[in-house]
Image (cartoon, rainbow, N blue to C red; front, side, top):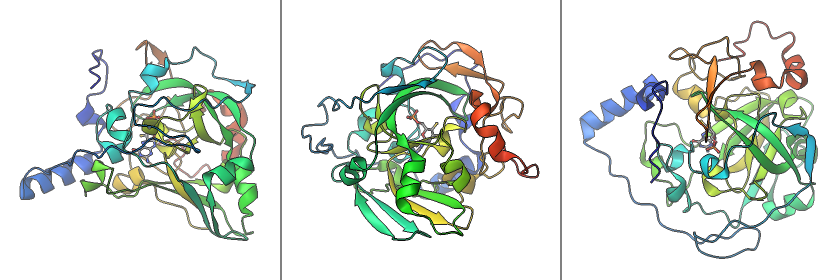
Length: 322
Ligand code: MTE
């Protein structure tokens, strides 16, 4: 288990946990006694035909780097971005990397559903044959005020939208992620609204920055970071970047995300990064870089305003930043 010495400014865990969760958890623990969390079973580690044990290194996944997306700051050391995670299905703290090795990722398929020409389920291998992988370095800003800079391998979400052939009235994408009771101990925590859902508009999904990642640092994505396929939306707070996606639904109804369902006033639908709009319980002005623990100023739209700000023209009455 990773033990990290936290500098004094770090948000204590209990302040980060949404109030609604704390209250629901207290009520439940008070009534029913401590909830036993089963130790996750170890699963075989296969991906795209590879086989092995949980300790087997990830498969190489080289793709040409698109220099347009360079992150603008040094890469976060891989050991830091792959050992300090949020993946609540495996636990409430940051040290879930070992537990996440139980995630069953092979075979994996993606259901394309809702308002599309042809609802269907595609095996991940087949999907990957229809897209071109590239590497992009993106900044990631968690709503908890930590940040990282990571080389992701993947493909534009716009390519999936194209393959899906959305119907004329579809305006949102709703992402559902894996909820596997056999391997995910967090699912026994019934105060959370499983499965983890996230949503964005179709306009956001077809913006060039929206990315579906299947790799990190030139290898397949680690389980703890959302294997085998996750969203990467670098101008939004990290909770919008759903991990281990199993279903993409096209809809005309605005999806309600996991955190939004718990506490809309703290984790709204849009969740665009803005240092000038504090979280109700802490400032968003600065962020702590994983690895160095250096504090740096947070940028509006996480620095991606040139590419995404125009998406929000005309949405002045929406709560775009919290
Ligand atoms: N996706 C699922 N399925 N479950 C989660 O708990 N956490 C979110 C997001 N995607 C989460 C998720 C949050 S809060 C963040 S900040 C990022 O994943 C963290 O990604 P990382 O662990 O790769 O840094």
